[in-house]
Image 1 (cartoon, one colour):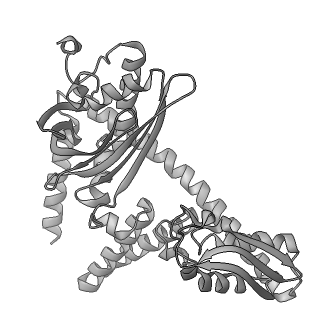
Image 2 (tube, rainbow, N blue to C red; image 1 turned 45 degrees about the horizontal axis):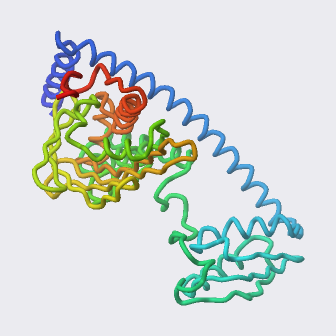
Image 3 (tube, rainbow, N blue to C red; image 1 turned 90 degrees about the vertical axis):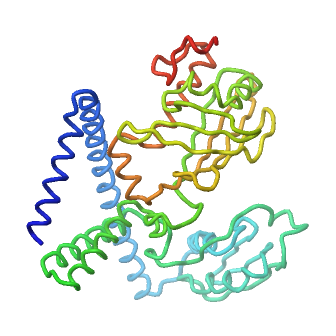
Length: 383
């Protein structure tokens, strides 16, 4: 077993050296790896600082709660009101529709709430430290129809324990990472089936803490939910000009570096060839799902695409005659966050690629100058 592991390690080391020392692309790959390592170190330092502050603040808060519980001092009305407002924001979809008034531990609730959220709201307020009594003067509605205060909003997850939430705060992430690392090390020392299971669980916990994504996203089994990328920029050009260029996908290779080719295969459907990790290319087909001239373009990849993604680009004219562009894209790594992390290590970060190509597009629209590293020769623009 040790010989097999050594053989695999040697093969991996050899492949890595060949990749980095390649006479054609090795220099660029080493530079990308060095930049990624520097960036990772900076992010790690920032994360450790944030985690330390988070844990320190939690310790101070727990100590204050313990002292308050032992002394049972009355909570000032202003403090209690803010405490209640902070908690109800986790259990109702329209917290601003609920008005809170406090007097000597008695909390009065007024306003509007959905019927399905009424009982969880009352339980939440009643369990708040310092609350003696709850007076319910809320109007409950079975639906939001016809109630202005209940329009919009989104479903809340409720008061969940930290480790059951979708995203974790820095402090719990650090603790989970340390616990996962310790469990993985214990499993590696123990060996056997139990040790293998402990190592796998510890590694999964570390990956969950580092990526701060749920296990379904890590495994790539969460359907169309994935990594969301957003970018907003203002282009100094009128909205009709910006939309015209953006909606003509087949011209993208003349302005962008990472889009190698776009071929229209049917009305509203196109085949794309884009740059992928390690100098490879990736092909997929996409179809336009919504197109409103000078306002919005939405798309999604078709079934069978190697990398599923979908998104929307919104165009908003400004008072100065410019165009504000907002891009929102959801990207699903084919093998989950592990593949996404490896792609980033190889210099293929979707967010960085989006930022750089949007900068190229903005430059062309504002100055007429084509980027020197566009996928196709600038002379082809005039063709």
